[in-house]
Image 1: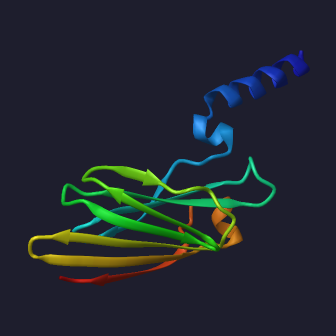
Image 2: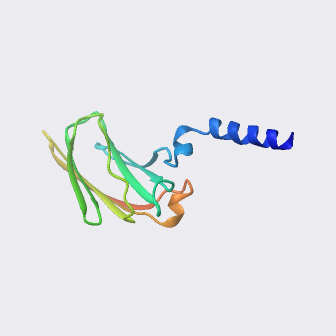
Image 3: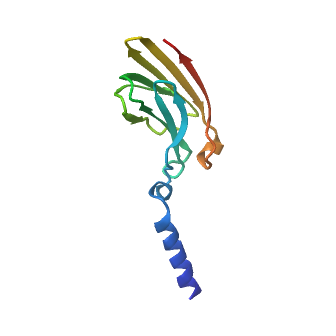
Length: 138
């Protein structure tokens, strides 16, 4: 009887977990908003890899087309994002990751850099990673 109850509790617990938690990939968390450009997100995956992996994402506001450069270790990706578009960059074990954002509009060019430093505590908690944001106004 106890074994049946225990098994039922385990099955119910797994079924009631959100899909992201059951898979090991956590929901995205807001890291910061970049004035007039967009929102930067972060997430982690500590189940599918031997070591913790982190990922950055960015959603552009309703403003203008924005060039985004992602860097993590030797990995570098350039993307052009349209207003309201969300882009996730690959999970990587690199503890230092950065996003460079460039938005050209009629009044001028707006640039921003977000540097993120992950640590082991970011893989199993809701604490955000350390980051710096630099905004270079028009």
